[in-house]
Length: 148
Image (cartoon, rainbow, N blue to C red; front, top):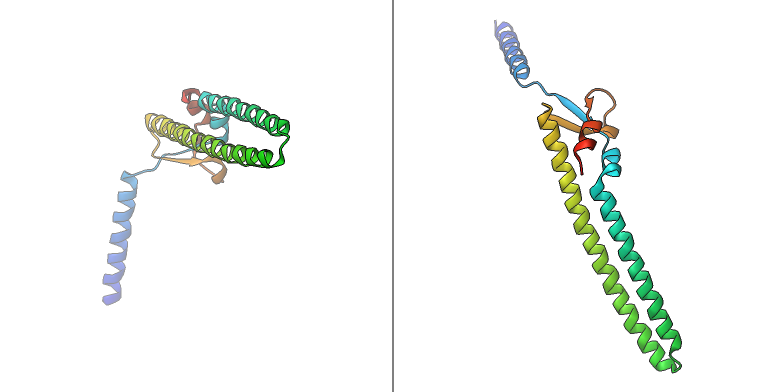
């Protein structure tokens, strides 16, 4: 009798669980993030801006090196070199921080776009394409068209 009631309770629990699962079906999408990011105009603009700033920093560094080389007095030359090294470190750090902040904004924008597009298409779960072995609808093309 005890075994029968345990078995009935187990069957009832499984039945309720299956009915609940039926109500909350998950529609899965996959997105190739690398393809979306590489086609993003935001990413391309950020890379171009970063390259321009890197070229400016290289030009500044060349000018600083020329100024150090012009100096004949070794003591003044070393002081000038230390000054330029400190300035270069500050400029490089500021550039890296600006890039990281801009990259974070672009990442948030792309993530929001993917989320909105997936919701619009009726998906409840989006996975990165590289992490999925089987299943899910590939919505990379739809998302890439919307990402700016």
